[in-house]
Amino acid sequence: MIRRLENLYLNGKFDISPGIGYAWINVKAASYINYAVIHSDQLWSVREEYPAEDLAAWLAGRDLLIVLRFGSPPYQAVLGVPHHSSYGQNQICERTRPRPADENSALYALVVFSRLIDAGIPSKLVVVAHTTAEDPNKNPASPYCREVFSESADLLFECHGMSATRRLDLEVSAGSNLHGRPLRFGGELARALGWPNPLGAQIAPGQRAAMLLHADGHSQPGRLQVPALGTFSLKAAGERGMAALHLEVRPVFRLPPDSGEGIPPAARRLGAALASALMAYPDPFAAD
Image 1: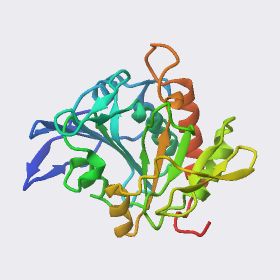
Image 2: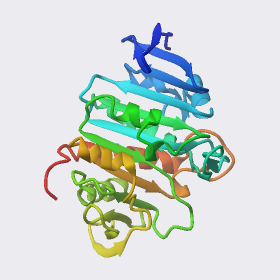
Image 3: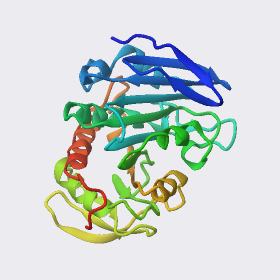
């Protein structure tokens, strides 16, 4: 399916030869995987149900930075998954400040990425698999942040997970990023997903105030519980003139209904809806 690329580590930066395949570089007890994708079928053993064997192994690893690329920059979207862990691993950053993991968050993001490839949209997926060290999207020097901002892109879309105790199944915000349009994107997502419960979409950057959006188009005011107002990666994107959106997802969309492996049906449904919403959101700088 893929072939190993010759690679160099020079002057503190990764220099990856172009082409099809991946490079695996061990640096400071962390690994960097660069995987150039030509067809979405390369991602799957069974399409949108089971990731390819090598990719599944990487996602189950620890302290891995996984970069999947389609096309060339400027990318229309960079999908970021900074807090991924495998099902059953509910804590990350164990060696610094332990925090809850976003179990299986890379799985719905992988469906999004696959659908964007099918549509021919240049995009990049950046996943940190079970970091045991720093919180990747809070540290400007982290490999995650360096990779996210290493190439030009229109939109950073971060995929997260929140606990089952949260009021809403989904929350969309831009944190304090002035270029994101969470309310507009949230409306597209609510329609595409067709979920019986409303999702929360931030009304304006820097606020907890939200609209609760229903699939049939009606809405009511509410508040976000996880608006990501202080998240570095969202702010850094804004400083670069780049739109950013932040999605929080309850376990119903991430964890399997039983102990089975693979991508849960609700995660496939969410990933497909997110891809549709992103494709219906062509200009992130347009007014709501």
